[in-house]
Image (cartoon, rainbow, N blue to C red):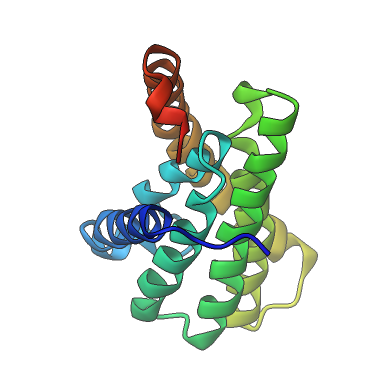
Amino acid sequence: MKRFSTRHIAFCGLIAALYVVLTWVLGEFGYGPIQFRISECMTVLPFCFPIATVGLTVGCLISNLLSTVGPLDLILGTLATLLGALGTQLCRKKNLWWLAPLPPVIANAILIGLLLTIYANTWTLGYFLTMAAQIGLSELVCCYVLGLPLLLLVRHHQNNNKRGTEL
């Protein structure tokens, strides 16, 4: 089993803290059927730093403590971010940087769409698809409009600074 270094723990703590602050700063805009959780732009970071998955997951868990959906958001919301970050890591293995923002979009659309359907107690396919589409669209904006430029910036920095890949 690989051990976490002090540097890894600090990096994960920083990612978690940034995720929480970026989520909470927009208040209600980070929750609900149409949400712009700008912190989700950071789900591209596991493409460059796989260890960032831990910080993103912890940050999402803490952020979801304020959710009005309740305890189910702690589970499904956090799982969506975890699966999205893991999917982004898979894109890294094939060097598909342009697809790196897509796994979080898909994971959130499905799981948060399901969460909102359960919360509304409206068990129709149409309702689920509507919620999934709304979440997917807002996630698409956050992950591609904000996340992809972040990924390109980090990759550029890594290419210019060999020490940037040591994490």
